[in-house]
Amino acid sequence: MTYDWTLWIVFILIGLATTLPRGSFIILGERASLPEGLQKALRYAPAAALAAIVVPDVVLVGGVVEVLNPKLAAAFAAVLATQVSRNPWLPFIVGMGVLLGLRHFL
Amino acid sequence: MSPSFREGAREGFRVFLPLSVGLIPWALVTGMTMGGVGFTPLQAMGMNVIVFAGTAQLGTLPLIAAGSPVWLIVVTAFVLNLRFIIFSAALARGFHGVPRAERWLAGHLLTDGVFATCLEKMLSHEDPRWRLGYYLAPSLWSWLLWQVFAFCGVMAAGSIPKSWSLEFMATIALIVLLVPMARLRPMLLAALTGGTLAVLLRGMPLRLGVIVAIIGGIAAGFAAERWQGAAR
Image 1 (tube, one colour):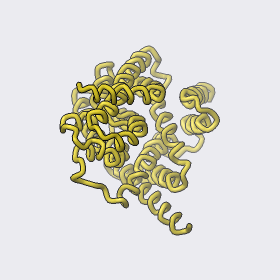
Image 2: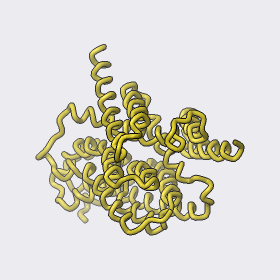
Image 3: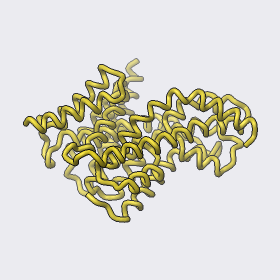
Image 4: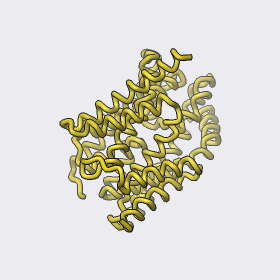
């Protein structure tokens, strides 16, 4: 796949979307503060967003839910790898190994 | 540079150096994924410099590769970085007396690792120049590591065949980030709700389902926390 110049606009927009939350209160200083309820709710944003990206990617094959597919098996293997070892490389080695192995043999 | 800035910088660097090794696999994986979705080295490093946010980069790469609408890509990046509003609010007092331009730089360079390392001293040391040095040294070191090892990853990806599906490394990376979060019950519920809703609502126009899923996940986690608190 190749991308045209509009990709750079996307980068700049993503850059704004990532820098504004980081800069927010550091730049505003003591002139602003965040309500406690909102702070609590925001803590759940990363987990909800990560799952909303990962889960469809690993359970859908061509837009249909397919429970037995190499990607889901690879995802489980990666989860398992994070549980049994603190080696930061292991989930990637195991996950990619399962994905490519199953694709090769099935 | 004042002596106290330099002294703070030395101290911050000394504390952060051993932890910073943990950035290397992430930078390599991000680089390989950017190469895997078909970015040229220039495009990949452009994203790496402009965005400089691992989770947001890894999270948006599958969407960019799938040709998702731009607004969805941008909103996803924003949501993935929402946690930094909390970090930024926690650190804000530490930037009292620091000029505006340096604050923008500090904001752009804020990372999870630097936040965790610097928070305590940023709130307790009384000299603003010392604090700025203590914050900026680890931040700039992170930036350098991130660029160098992402570049190595991009270059490595170029010599690996397309059939190896390197872009799946982004998904694995997101899983590795998600698993430790999900150890807390309300967090697990937020993730399960977000994931399930994203699958169920995949038919919604403009991929709005992803956003609804994220909001639903946040609501579920927040409600579970309230309920857990009330049960105690």
